[in-house]
Length: 240
Image (cartoon, rainbow, N blue to C red; front, side, top):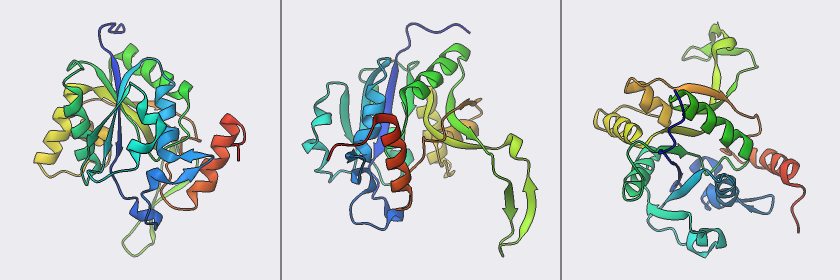
């Protein structure tokens, strides 16, 4: 289908988590790498895309750090109280968007802990989704041999890696369809680990759009040096 010129693009950044797997008292979105917090890097990547009309950041209700960060003075950024679970934070962001976005507008949901997102990958996703009129996600094809294990840690099967992808973000869907899918998953008690999972369970097609290996998610402390390396490779060494 042709691109719907009337539909705008928005972004939601869930950032209400405490980053428990990092083993630190500081929420991981506020950890510093390559001269800025993970949250700032992720926001800058989204702000670099002129096609994104606005960004909703879902923060913990008790968050006091974001208001002190200069980037939140950007007119395209708005905040909302998030939830304990990612899906709840995304739903809160979608509800907040209803006051300014149309139900058929596109929404890109991105992880605050993916600081190395590049502008050309955002553009590739938007072009693929709007050209085909099918929601989609950035993803990376598996290159390693992948094993399926039993409960006792033994190999059951070697999976066909040619059909396997690592899901990334942003994940881009129509506002009304994503909102309905997330609400349905929540009502039925189904575990939707990402937006694509909820859309799949609701019966929607989801396309895979090739992303970059550098679009990694910072989950454990060992991920921070790698994220720093990618960011410095993209932007040059951070000033000290």
